[in-house]
Length: 417
Image 1 (cartoon, rainbow, N blue to C red):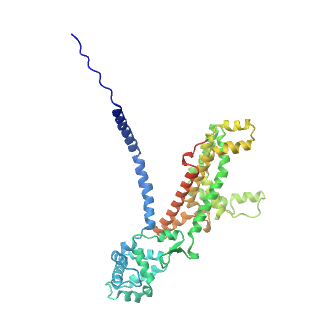
Image 2 (spheres, helix red, strand yellow; image 1 turned 135 degrees about the vertical axis):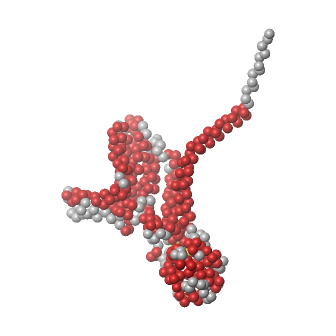
Image 3 (cartoon, rainbow, N blue to C red; image 1 turned 60 degrees about the vertical axis):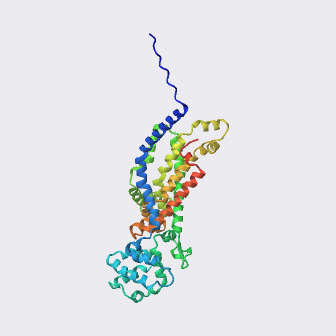
C-alpha cells in the first residue's frame, strides 16, 4: 500500500511579498500615527488654534456689523462719495439709538476711535441724543447734534468699519496708515512709535543673547571638562533659577540693584565708586536681570555639545605643534558652533517676548513689545491692536528661525563635531 505524497505548496510570488510588506508598513504607520494623536490634538488646541485666532483678530472688523448689522450692509452698498444717501443715514441713525440702549455702541465707538481719535465721545453723545424713532431727515438730525456729521471723512470711517476685514491695526503696528485717497503712508511723527519699540525689543534681546554667550561659554567649557559627578553637581547650581518664580527673581534684582542695595554698598565699601550707581529702573537693570534668567538656556546646549567633543581632538592638535589657543580656535571652537547657534536662537526668541522683567526692573524707555501687547489686551481692551503687534512679533521670530535654519542648519543643533 503506497502513501500519497502531497505536492509542496508553491512559494509566494515577489508581488505577493511586496503587497504583504506594504500592508505591514501601513499598519505600523497607522499605529505610530495613533500614538501621536494626543500630542497632535494638544498642539492643535493649545498652539495652532490660538495663533490662528490671533491672526484673525489682527484683521477682524466686526464691531459695527455686530452692533448695527443693517447699517453695516447699507454702508457697504454706498460708493463712499461725499455724504451718504438719506436712506443710509436713516438706517444708521435708527440702529445707533438701539445700539446705545443695548450698550453695544461703545464697541463701535472704540473701533472708530482707533481710526480717528475723538470719534468715541462724539458717537456716544450722538447715540444718547437721538430720538427713539428714526428721524425723517436723518442727515439733518445728526448734523444738528454734532457738526462732525457734515464731514464726509466721518462717513468714510463708518464705511471702512462696515467692511468684514481691515488692515488698520496691522498698518498701525508698522507706523503706517491709509491717507484720504486710500494710499498707504507713514503716520505723523508724533504717532510713529511702534518701529522704535520693535527696534528696542530686538536691541535688548541681542544684547542679552551676547551677554549670555560670553558668560555661558567658559562656564560650559569648564563643566564639560570636569568629571561627571562634579559637573552634575555644579549643573544643579546652574539650573537653580528654574526653581524660583520669575516674579520673585525680578523683585530680588530690584533689591540687589537699588541705590541702597548690597551691590552699590559693596562697590562703595571697596572704594570703586563714590556715589551709588543707577542700576535699576533703566536699561542696565533690564540687561542684568534678563541675562540672569536666560543664562541656563545658553549653558545647557553648549554643555551638551562640548560634552560630546572627544578630548583627543585637541590633544592631537597640540601634539602636532599647535599652540593651545590655535588648537582651541581651529579644532574645538568650530565643533561648538551648533551649540552656540542653538543657545543663541533659544535665548533670543525667549528674550524677544519678555514682559515681566522689563516691566518691573526697567524704566519707561525700556519696555519691550510684549508690554504693549499686554497694555492693549488688559487696559484698553483693544484686541485688534494687541493681535497685530503680536503678529508682527510672530513674523519676526519666524523669519529669524528660518534664517538660522538656512545659515546654520536645524539638523546640526546639539550635534558636536
